[in-house]
Image (tube, rainbow, N blue to C red; front, side, top):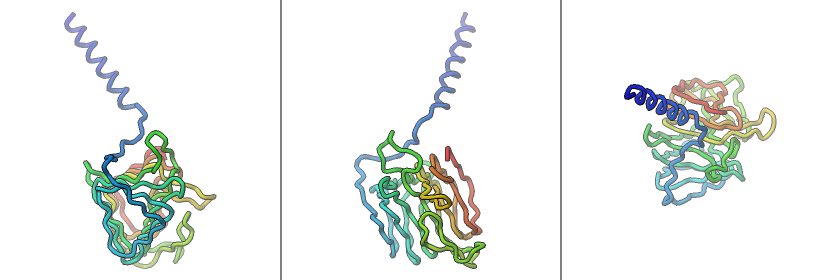
Length: 223
């Protein structure tokens, strides 16, 4: 009897474990209620800027990191893409994005909609543009349809994205004019892309247009 009881208990634990693993849940986004909201409304970042973990930054419209400027986002930060204006972050050639999270404190880009109401394509996405070789020079980025990229600098550096999650982004404004979860145009080998997950994208999770960057540990989930 004791042996049968132990076998039954083991089976019950195994069934419970399987249920937990297959349960379809929205990604957990760390959003402490005491973080103040800082709106970035069609902003052009022209000087070195740091977005603090103590704030939640709301991308409204196209927010640009211009050439010569570096935007640093602290580990554990949450950046919201505005649903109404399809907020997007665009790093132009010569600009840099330093978004270096950790395994325990990732940087999360997600929808501004309330938890439970978020959906694929809520906002635009993250676009990195560089000066590395492409087959059309200069090329124009899809979706935004204005900024150009490409050049001859194979080792160009657009910054670092490490331990980053991008959720509910990706939108097709019209055929062949989309913003992906993470768009990479002419991004050079001096750029670090490592441990990045794009989830629930309304268009491609990742899309490359030329460039020489070597990305590692990328996950596309339900994109």
